[in-house]
Image 1 (spheres, helix red, strand yellow):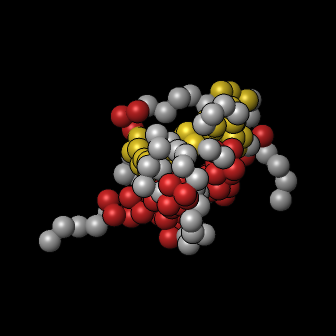
Image 2 (cartoon, one colour):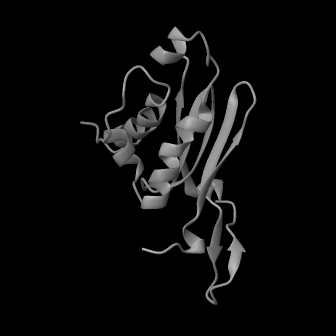
Length: 140
């Protein structure tokens, strides 16, 4: 295929301690094909899934990331990922999985059902996916 400007999903990383990384679609096209900034999503139209790293075995082994987290934002009542914020050691490496999912339309359930290597900080992405899957369970 060919690249379209509207398909750009660009992660950004601030190399602080801990690192801070975000990703979302950065542009869109209007009805005339002109580039327009993507408006911020209305928080009322989003579901937020957050995995904290204080109980992540890799974070415990490395004695880091006690206050770190992964937040994935989805369109309300869907698993469609619209963005992600990560505060963690190596956040710049973790964010790429979410960027790939956004670009190729992989929903949060898909990330949750993907087996992740253990122990890794990236398991927090899977944790967000498992939260989404569990939210769809019906209680008896």
